[in-house]
Each structure stands twice: as structure tokens, then as C-alpha cells.
Amino acid sequence: MSSRRRVRLGEQLRRELSVKIQYLVRDPDVGPLSVTGVDVSADLWFARVYVEPQGSADEQDRTMAALGRAAPFLRSVLGRELHIRRMPELRFERDTSIEAGQRIESILREVLPARDAEEGPGEEGPGRTTDPVRPPGTGDP
Image (cartoon, rainbow, N blue to C red; front, top):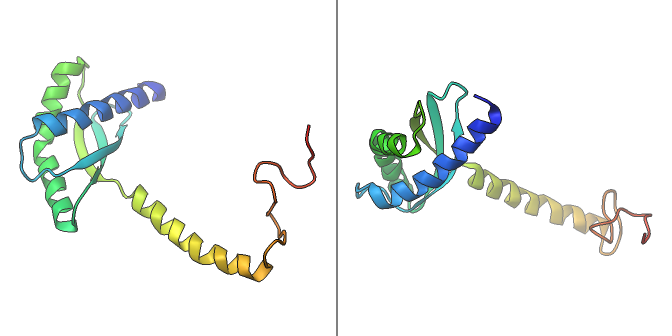
């Protein structure tokens, strides 16, 4: 299957799973969550579904376990509705990209103020410009 078709199928699965989990899964352990992405394998045997569960760490763990139990049901529902020859096996994984981004952002906040203090206010250091859009030395067109 082409890469573009896999991406399209992954996006369609993401949209459908967001709705199906919310309205069809009756497991009380499934808490509020966001389906952030779906990666479909090249052979269509597996779809890695990235979710961001809300709540405490214990609630998130219960949500992930409940999604694992609901995966066969969701797969059968989606297989009937999407009319694709081979419905991938759904594997739910916690999306850690937002946490990683927040961690990087906090590190940058710690490092950048220290560097700005060394250069002093109003000075232009390497890579710093007064206009965030135009590099230094370029005038108006």
C-alpha cells in the first residue's frame, strides 16, 4: 500500500476511533482521552493508535488497559463500516509527545533566560534579530 494511502487510512481511523470510543465503548474504566494519531503498518496488519488519556496516572493506566480490552470490538465495528479488505489489528499506546514537548520547553525556559541575561538587554547576539521575520541586514522590499 502506498505511503499516502496509509496516511489517509490512519487519519480516517483516528477520526472514527475518536467517535467510536466516546459513544460505543461502555467500559467504565475508559476515561476521557484524545486520539492524537494512528500509524498503519505497510502490510496493514497493525495500526498503532496514539491516545492521550486524561486524569491521574492510575486513571490513565486503567484507560489504557480498557482500550486494550475494547480493541477487538472496535476493530470489528470499524471493519464493517469502512469496507476495507483487511482491517488492521489496533494497538493502543500512550502518546508521550506532548509531555516530551513540555519537558523540552521547560528546559529551554531555564537555559534561554540565562543566556539572555549574559548578553544584556537590547543587544543583538548571534542569531538574534530585532525583527523576528527578517534577518539582519535586509531592508524593506
